[in-house]
Image (spheres, helix red, strand yellow):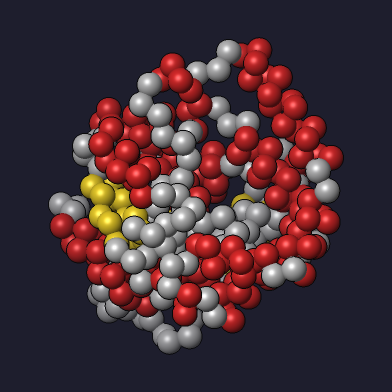
Length: 314
């Protein structure tokens, strides 16, 4: 089936009503046969896949990029509107996106490609929706990884105390002021310099992609919901537990693509995952940082597509 990709439409905004919230998404090659959802990392948006969607859409992939709720051009609800934001909520968003946006057009299993936080969301979906997911490509996978279940099991009373303390802390933390200074003092550029090993890719477009959502008046309340939600997650939504659940069936092939020079999530964590879970494939990209898909898009696209081509599903 031929792609209907038109140059310039990669970031064209489409809007979807999800549980009363406005969700923004883009697509390239929507009529193609192989559905892929690209899931961005923390602080990014669907536009961070600027160097990837066209490549896949020209190879018979219906390439969807989705602004997770709280990010990009999607709504930024706070704790009063949504209660919490974490990978459980974002997984539910992806699940409904597949059912309501992709399924009317395509019945094939969905490929999930994630960067950082998006990888954790993809892993969560692989466990929750394993019969609908063809594979996960995670680059990289955040969250603590522990081999022993006992190390991550908290007593109920202590967890309740910790969760309440966390909620109070972030409610009173002046995130509005913190975000104001982040945008005014060049902290965003400093963070990108730490994330990217190759600094030439930190251009004006990238800075705008990361900065624009932070400037919205609802950004602080949504960040507060994320801090509370991610800090108080149940064990079953943490990467260690999710990987063990996926290991039990091995129904969803799992590829890790890790930057050798990743300063945010060091490579030794990727090796640790691959060592604990031998069915996980680890691919290391030399001289690349935390955002390989944007820093070294040619290599990232090639590695990902070769993996996809080798899947029995396709």
